[in-house]
Length: 378
Image 1 (tube, one colour):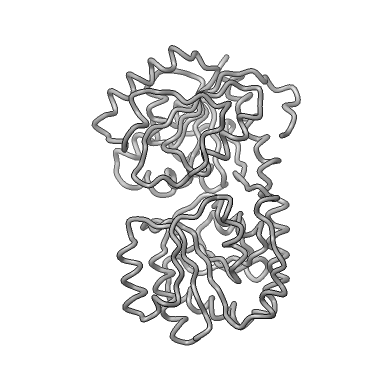
Image 2 (cartoon, helix red, strand yellow; image 1 turned 45 degrees about the vertical axis):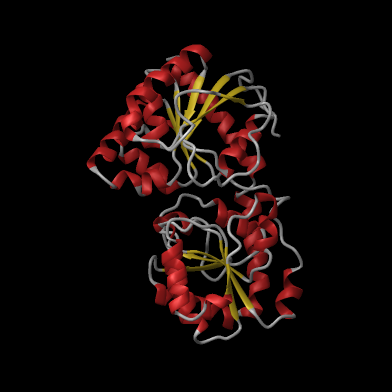
């Protein structure tokens, strides 16, 4: 872990997050290696648990009114009151909270300062537009946040438009473990087999566009008998996605192993010739960074955050968001350019090494903590 280099290294920190995801585990595991005393507050326990690793032993899990079942807006007053109790008991130096409209909102309502608000991408790119109520919450939270962090310039810019002081922001990609996510001998694999494998591990929820990929795969499979699709995870659109594949007559060419443990993920990335993310909404996608780190060319929707990572024809391709025909055409182009994929994979890995090294990027969070506490004293 990076040395703290003069940072106050004995803070009490409340890390307040919506649920318990691989991203939460990444943050908590790294925080556990610092000298900070970290208290993990979880807002809900959702129906699908996407992280099977335990909370790191050094992290103190807080029992409170939330975290036992799904979040409900009608419980907001009770949650705010009990969060105030938690804060009064712990007496933290700062609260690190996000997403904006739930965890950071409750943190702000508690009256405690200083608060480091962390965007999770979808809160500023999707949730804020769902209603006037969500817009008002976003303004309310960001105008009262001491400091702000996100993983993409596009979300930072959105935060500023909703009232965040631009001088109190820091952007850093959350990054990945470059030792865990690494290439295998991909060139020999590609040269020695006829089939071409597409891989996607986005959740089967409307914002991630997996249904767009399903429609595209039907189109491509009708033209190429040697293509297959590896589709992991699950979600609320499972019936829709399976229906598209079944009606298209390609269900037998799709492997759907369900949820895959983090330790197994590199093996799945390295089975693929091409990674696809058809997401409609994203910050700097950790899944995309994992694919780049594994040296896989990436074909992604042309939303702003993806453009920060994928350069057309260099480490992958972009396609117009939501356009299944355009995605199918790009997949066929990638198959035609198969001999170029190893070089593009090498470029993908270099992209990850340059910008997506979690060990380096995590240091920016520690700097944000210091800045948050410093500004909170003014």
